[in-house]
Length: 206
Picture 1 (cartoon, rainbow, N blue to C red):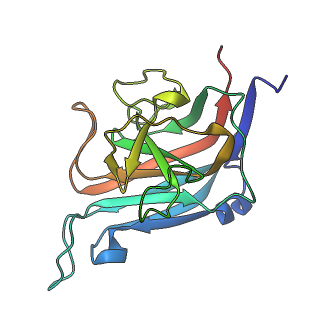
Picture 2 (cartoon, helix red, strand yellow):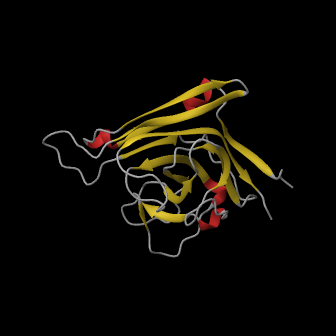
Picture 3 (cartoon, rainbow, N blue to C red):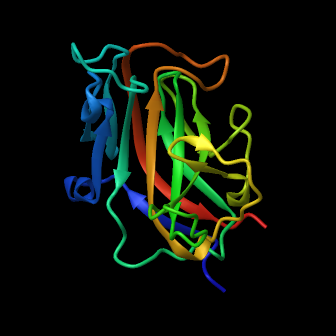
């Protein structure tokens, strides 16, 4: 029997940052920006994903949407098998914004023209300033839901189809933030964002 929990990412060193890359609307003409750093605290280190969300775009360019930034893990060397686990948990210190947790799995749907990995998303919201251990939620504040409640998406939009995640073929993960959308009580709109990340791990709760 596998252990009841499995660390996937532990943001305790600068070496960990090499496993991630940043993206934002700036790749398409937007003006948002992001950074990922390691913060040394008295009781250890943690990651800091921060930046600025802008709804503006470079003059003369038209893009479908702006105001987003994200950090995505580089593809794993092979796959991570989470078939023995039912929940993804993260230890975070938020800023009152709503973030999006994404799990990427090997594309086994084989939709016409779709060569990208399958993506599954859930909202993650933590109140400002305090550390919280949260299990990703797609509906309510700190609502604990299992991996099979992550919603299938295609380029950020929920797919209206009956699909099941293949947790044995996880190829990557990401955490992103949008200027718009999320929970009603969450902070929205352009401006600075900041979330601190201690670790991400899989849990078996049943």
